[in-house]
Every structure is written in C-alpha cells, then in structure tokens.
Length: 298
Ligand SMILES: [Zn+2]
Ligand SMILES: [Zn+2]
Image (spheres, protein in one colour):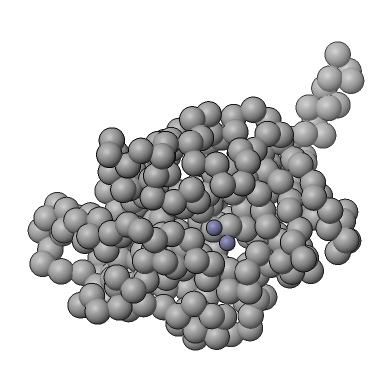
C-alpha cells in the first residue's frame, strides 16, 4: 500500500497536475477515418479520390490506388478568405476538378461568392506536386514554389530550418515548420483551429526515407519539441505503407492494401522515433519500429 501511494505521488508531480490550468480556446473537433482503403488496381469501380471531411472546413483526400500506387493524401483547409491545398497528388488524376467541386460545395454552404486558393506542398517529390500544372492558370490562385527559398519567402520564415513561419487564411492561422531531411524543402503544417499537425513524408505509418540524416534528426527533434508544447490532436502524414500487423509494411510498389494501419499517428510514436534517431548519432541504419520504419537512403 505504502509503495503504491508513493508511486501515485511521483506520477502526480511528474505531470504537474497541482497547477491551476489556464483557460484555453476550444479546438474544433472532427473525425479522422480509422481506415483509408484506397481500392485495388481496377479504376472502373471507384472515384479518383476518396474524400472525407474532418469537419466542415478541413477536408482529407486520398488518391485512389488504381491511379498511382503511392496513393498520397492531400488536405484542403478553409479559412474565411483563403483555402489552402496541401499537395496536388501523384498525377494521372483530375485533382483541380475535385478540389473545385469541394470549394464550390463549401461556398454554397457558407453563402459566399468566392474564395482565394493557395496551393502549397509538404515537399517537392513528384508524388506530391504532379498536379501543380492544373492550378497554374486557375483564377484567384497562388501556387507556392517548391524549393526552399520559395517556401521560406512565401511563409515568412526568417532562418531555415530553425524558425517557423505562418499563414493566416482568415480566422485560421497555420504554423509552418521546416522539417528537412526527407527532402530539403519539407515542411509540416500546424492548424491552430483543430490542433492537426500535417507531417508529409517525414512522419507517417510507413517507410520514412531519410536522405539527410543530420537534418532529419534535427527536424524530428524540433517536431517532438513542438508537439510537447502545443495541443496536437492528430498527426497526419502523406502515405500509409504500414499494415495493421505491428512491424509489417506492404512491399514497395504495392497497389492493393486492404489491411492498412490507420493514418493517424500520435505523440508516442514521435517520441519513440526521436529517441531512436538520437541514439543513431548520425549513423542511420534501417530500423523497424512498431508503426513505421526508418529507412536511410544514400
Ligand atoms: Zn517524399
Ligand atoms: Zn511521398
């Protein structure tokens, strides 16, 4: 009994629950689907995108497996004055038409005539920027450049990658965090209204390909620190390659993935990744974790 009481006291002091909590703004709630099955190789039986709103102003899209085995996730986030599309997909799909129909639906619901569109990217790899050309001549649209300098200038990031930037969509501020390592211009987006953190190809249930180990280690450390200091409700990446069976991923190039891991990752996985990456001290080896794999690339 005595021992149990001591443990309880230690736990209480560790989380600091004696402090009076400061009142905080309420985060907007929503729902992330637990399965995001994107179909098999046959395109005749399914739409090009699976779309599910997190809530009225935050839409999650996934490209169908039959159009590209990468089946990336795209995100469309609405503020009062601007909407932001995060990634344009892996190609061979009419992403602009799907985004336009979602925007039209939103405008009708809000009784609003128009809204500007910003098209930005989690990073510059082909499976996330292939639809860019469809937005080049779209009216009332800004297409953010793909390289580090363009990203830094657009989001007002003073020092790359240690500082963050932001964008205000109108009553909705997104923090922009540089997280190079997978690719030099990789960023994460934090939505202050829902607490969702979008992590691109840097942190998701699958193979985390690392090109620059030092930059990646620092990015994961900064992400981990950010998550410890902010209310993060969901961490959503750009792919799912992991299966529901722990430590098992689908093979590279796999189209049909009926037993996928859920999209959402949590702080536990990020803390574990941070710890594993730190312990490698720059000498990365391919390391299988329960929900993802660290995969250094030359
Ligand atoms: Zn990538
Ligand atoms: Zn990717």
